[in-house]
Structures are given as structure tokens and as C-alpha cells.
Amino acid sequence: MQENEMKQDEKEVKQEGKEAEAIKTDEQQTADKEKTVQAKPKAAKKKKLQELEAEIVALKEELAVSKNAYFKAYADADNMKKRLQAEADNVRKYRIQSFASEVLPVLDSLERALDVKVDDQNLKNYVKGFEMIYTQLKSVLEKEGVCEIEALDKPFDPNFHNALMQEKREGVESGIVIEVLQKGYMLKDRVLRATLVKVSE
Image (tube, rainbow, N blue to C red; front, side, top):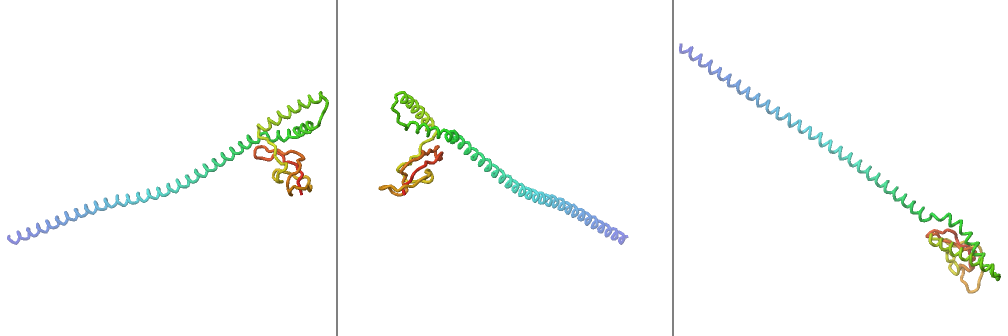
């Protein structure tokens, strides 16, 4: 009987041990599961972070390309604007050029007519009229920036003078304009017509 009780106690102890082991195993499994569950979000977060960092790098590169394209387009537009402005300024500045070129021979003819000496009183009245027309025409051209090129007794300059003849003249250095054959004119800073000259040898 006592033996039976001992066996029964041993069985109960073994049973309790098994139950305790089972509880430990369950607890361990639960802990392992929790660790796994905790590890999964960490891995997922790490992966997501890497993806976001890669996306940021890609967006930065794209932004740099877009900025470069923008600055290039802005510079091109600015250059185009400046070029068009310069062309418009030139058109305004030299708008009278073709007209002035056509009028210069008329001015030459008036000067030649006024150089003729007349004694007849009636003709002198006409000459006064021509003088008035000549003065007005010259004044209008000067207002638009057309002015005569000073050449007589100046050193010959191929940028403004066109030498038709050379002549040796006493007391005059070589390369000096000694006679103006046809007046030359400037339109602001541009040569409208070069002065035809005779130059000393």
C-alpha cells in the first residue's frame, strides 16, 4: 500500500514536471514568436527606409537635371531677348540709313549749284531759296545723326576716307588730305559714305 502511494507520488511529480516543461515550452514558443514578430517589423522598417533613401537619391538627381534644364532654358531665353533688343535698337538707331544714302546725292547737287557765282538779281533770289532748302535739309539730317566727316588737312584714315589721287605738295607731310573731292558722312557711329579725297605723297 505504501509502495502504491509512493508510485502514485512519483507519477504525480513526473506529471507535474512534464506540465512544468510543457508550460516552459509554451512560454518559450510565445517568447520566440514575439521575438520573430518584433524582428519582422524591424526588417520591414529597414527595407522601407532603404527604399525611401533610394527614392530620395533618385529625386535629387531628377531635380538636378530639371534645374540644369531650367537654367539653360532661362539663359537661352535671356540671350534671345538681348539679341532681339540689340537688333531692335539697331533698327531704330539706323532707320534713316537707306533714306539718307539716297538724299546725299541731292545734297551734293545743291552744294554744286550754290557754288556757282551769279550776278543776275533774279537768279540771286533763286539761290537764296536753294540755300534755305539746303540748310533745312542738312538740319533734318543732322537731327537724325547724319554729320559730315571732317577730312581736309587731316591725316588720311582708310576707315573714313577713300583716296582717289595722290599729289606731291610742298610743305605738306605725306598722307595728309589736301583736297576733298566728295564729302563723306557718318550716321551716328557708322560710316554712311566715305569721303573721296586727294592725299599728299
